[in-house]
Amino acid sequence: MSNTKIIPVGPYHPLQEEPELFKLYCEGEIVKDIKWETGYNHRGIEKLAESKTFDQVFFLVERICGICSTSHPFAFANAMEEIAGVDIPNRAKYIRSIIGELERIHSHLLWVGLAGHFLGYNTVFMWAWKYREPILDLFEMITGNRNSYAMFKVGGVRRDIPMALIPEVRKAMDGFKPKLDLLIGAVMDDPVIHARTKGVGVLTHQDIIQFAAVGPTARASGVDIDVRRDDPYAAYDMVDWKVIVTGEGDVFAKAYVRLLEMVESVSIIEQCLDGLEKEPEGDTEVKVKNIPEGMGTGRAEAPRGEVFHFVVTDGGYGPVRHKIRAPSYVNIATFKKSCIGQTISDATISLAAVDPCYCCTERMAVAVDQRTGNMLYSGEDLLKLSHMKTEEIRKKQ
Amino acid sequence: MAFKDFIFRKSLWLFHFGGASCNNCDIEILDCLTPRYDVERFGMLLVGSIRHADVLLVNGSINHKDKERLLELYRQAPKPILVVAIGACGCTGGIFAGGYPFAGPVDQIIPVDAYIPGCPPKPEAILSGIVQLIEKKKTEKAHA
Ligand code: SF4
Image 1 (tube, rainbow over the protein chains, first blue to last red):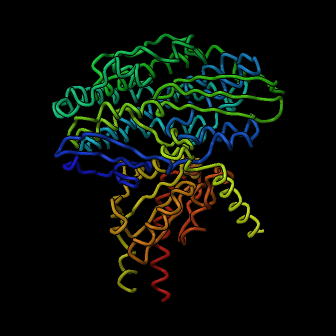
Image 2 (cartoon, each protein chain N blue to C red):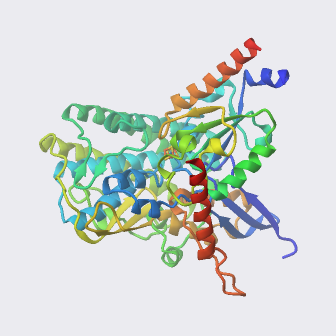
Image 3 (cartoon, each protein chain N blue to C red):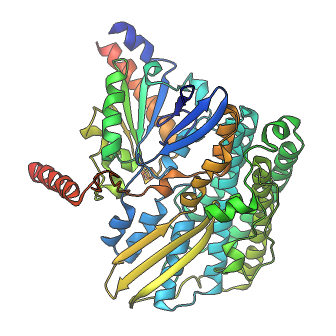
């Protein structure tokens, strides 16, 4: 181990938009081991959710992660509707799916851009982000905000997509299609991208099963899972689309899956718009007065994989327990496989390839000292922290 | 000081500190670099080290782990440095203010020169905030 050098990346590194620390243990150019440290982003969302009403929780879970800010409300709504036992109107289903797919497009474009940036190929970065802007404009038009859309509520959606707006959305999609084709062509045919991504960061079918990875990461290694098809919600069983699966498992395969998923998303949106035209305008929700006591689970396919929410209610105004599992939480573990044995320059793109999102992933972890068996952050420590906070609040009053 | 004030009038170099955020503010900051908004036309550049920076952009609520790092970064920064708090979280703690890891809004940890509210603020708002800050620096100079 004497030759091993540790290369730290982060926590505040210009390449990463989120704070996290990677330690690459290298011998020469080769990465021998990798460790990562998170916690810079921890906000205690599950606990906060217990102090909010059901309507407020939507705004909170939307802010778990800004990039997939619809998938969390999606899963939460699915969980709540399971508890309340309601079936939402078709119009609301279509609108939910449209928002979900628009989000997938913007998230995948964002990834393609960042992946280009990680490869040192900034042209791709600038292009992809330029094409992403019209999608954000569309969001602004439909929902009123570029990023956090606040569209969901128990029993439906907050805002309708009026009939007058449908041609606008179609126009934007028509404008986006040639750009997407261009981007797919540019990435698929570029010899530089081939050279940098083929055979790099390979995850086999077996690895995916072992790490329980989800989403495009799994689909690029030939594991055919997608919540939208396996456990249909919203309008996904009312439209015709296919799951993109390929087998190579390298970075190129992950790019391939994401790029082609965008094509599917465009087609889903167009079919949902057709559906929307047949439904009466304004029929966007069923009123849910009381949420009974119970337990519910909700799943949704976020751009990065399966989001899982588990909610316990007691008949009151807010959840008494809210458990969230985000896709990056399982995907990040695959770094142990994909980065080791690579050169340092390939390790960065292997890290980026799973599209990790740390703000989804943050957990309060309690470490146990192996020698003494004591918790390093014990109940007393937590109590002390809480006392400190109370003191501070008292001082302010 | 006069020399540094002169520097503040053009081509600010930015360092981005993302606290415990939801990522949207971070993305919108990155968005400012891309073709539609293109901050580089103002000579602004996102730099990799606080030691090269004129402006410290802070977004997201600050938790206990971030707090120490933010203080350390502020200590390392060449002075004077302009601090800009971005987003509802940076300004007040926003939706996360009640949580157990919350260690206070940015201005209770380090001095802040400008606040850009919004959740997330649009790139236009971020640009306008920073341009206003430059303007303010210019007029301060004129009054001095
Ligand atoms: S201000 Fe809003 S968008 Fe920005 S980090 Fe906080 S929650 Fe996210």
